[in-house]
Length: 224
Image (cartoon, rainbow, N blue to C red):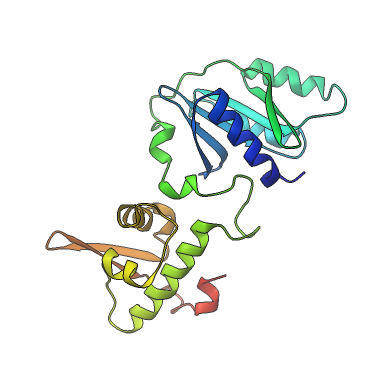
């Protein structure tokens, strides 16, 4: 079972049992559930490893509830690891084929005051992404949208430069249900600033492909 195969059962569990809106690949977190008054973080792996425990531990203070999700083990599993999870208040979700259930509940954690609420990190494309699919493992609807925007903006860079979101959307179809504000927010996100710059003139925001320090990248390079 791949991590990406675990996503849909975990998503259904968070939606149906914990009444959350579910998002994937939010920062370093595999799955995020946002409830009315709480946030849930889930780290998924094919096996119970110390790296998985470390990743889940790093989410403490960012989410109210933290879980790991692994395929349902055939034996009782690693009791030492289970002891660490219980001590840290991290819950365990088992995935059995297309079904997921809570094996053990952790405790509710205090959110660190210096951190923004987890819901503030969620963007529209996180709802369209499959958890467990890391960059390079396969295309997502978001990555296809971004690749198409990059392609257009690089071409336009050579033929004028700055573009409004309206001009971008005239040429690029996106997966967003509400394209204009979603593209506006995505292009201003810090993880896209390496290739995209923006400015405001006369109360209107413009975007432009950012030329690299070593010269303009080829289309093949930016659309991998």
